[in-house]
Length: 251
Image 1 (tube, rainbow, N blue to C red):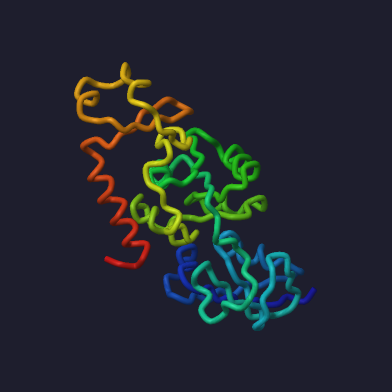
Image 2 (spheres, rainbow, N blue to C red):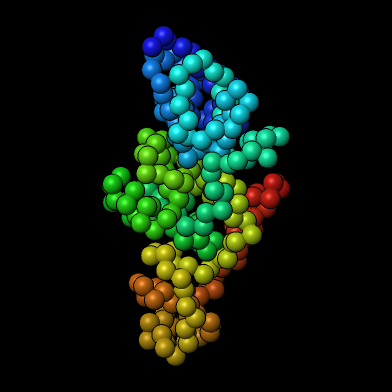
C-alpha cells in the first residue's frame, strides 16, 4: 500500500496528553497500512475514553473507523465539542460509579465524602482494576494513560491535576455530578452506604464526651465505622460548599 498522511487536530484539554501545549495541537501520522482511527489517536498518546467526538473530513465516525488514504481528523474531548453538539457522542457523561487506582486515595475519599460510589484497593494491580471496572460497570479513574488505553475500558478519566481537591472538581465536571452530591451518606473507609443507628445500639462504642454531646449517628454496615457530626463537621461542610462553588464555575 502506498504510504499516506493523516493529520490530526486535538481540541480542548486533550493537549494534556501531547507534547504540544497549544490549545489546538496538530500531529501528522505517516501510515503504510489500513489503520483504525482509535489506534491512530492512541499512538499520539491520547486514551480513547478521553475522546468524545471524531470528525474525519467533517463527518463524525466511531473508534472502529479505518483509514487507508490521506485525511484530516478533528478530535474533541468531553465538554470541548464546540458547535458540534448535534453529532453522535462517543462517551457517556452520566456515569455515577467509579473505580480508582491506588495512587488516587485522597480523590477516592473526597468522592465518597460527597456520596459517590468509588471502589478502591490501594494494592490492586491493573488486571484487578480492569476486572472490577468491567464486572461492576464502573468508570476507571487513573493517571496512567496506558491503563486507560486497554480495549476493555469503556468509560474513564485521567485527572489533569495532581492536587486531590482539583481532581475532585475535575471528576464532578467531567461526569456532570454536581446535582447528585449527597454528603455524609457513604463510608469513607469501605464505600458502603451509611445507615441511621440508634444511640442506644452503639453507646458502648462511644467515647465519654461523645455520649454526652451527640445524639444522631450513622453506622457503616460493612466495616462498622460510626459517624456523627462532631467538631470536624463544620470544616467538612465548608470544604464541600467550596467544591460545589468551583464545579459551578464560581471562585
